[in-house]
Image 1 (cartoon, rainbow, N blue to C red):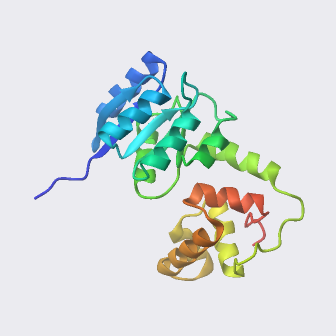
Image 2: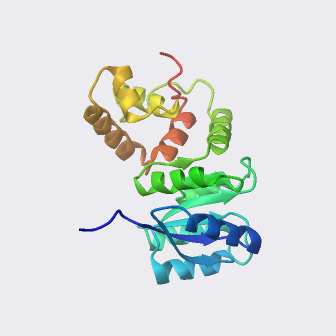
Length: 221
C-alpha cells in the first residue's frame, strides 16, 4: 500500500531568517517535503531544474533575478511546477506581473501554517491559492482597471459561461455555483472548462482577472 501523496516544495527568499523560518514551518506540516531553498531567483531556477519540485514558494524581490522573472522561467521550462508568490505587502505592485508570469498563488509573509498549507494544496489541485488580503487587493485593482460600460459579452462567450465567470469572480466554489444556477457540479465544471479555453485563463485567478477587465463581476443577480 502507498501512503498519502507528498508535495515537494522549494523555498526562494533572499532574507535568510525568513527563508529558514518558512523551511522550518513547512517541515512541521504533514504531506509536505522541502527539497531545497534558494537565496535568489537564479538559484531558484537552477534548483527547480535539479529537484523538480511540485510547488515553489517564491519571494518577489530578490537580487540577480527577481521573483517575477524566476516565475516566468520556471513556468516556461517546468510547467509541472506551480509557483506561490510570497510578498511582504498585499499591495505589492509586482503581484500582477507575477500573475501574468504564471504564478497561481499569493501569500503575505505573515501567513500562518494553515494558510500556507491551504495555498500549496490549492495550486496542486489546479485552483488558485490566494490569501484573503491578496484576493481583496487583486479584486480592488482589477475593479479599478475595468473599463466603464464593459458589460457586453466578450466574443465567443455564451451568456451562461459569462454568468458562471461572474460567480467565479464573486469567489463562489463550483458547488456554490451549481446551487445558485440549479445545475449539477459536473455541468458547472464543463462551463468552466469551456470559458477557460475561450478566455485563455489557466486557473481561477486568471479567470477573475479576465472577468474584471471585461466588467463581468456577477454583481447583477
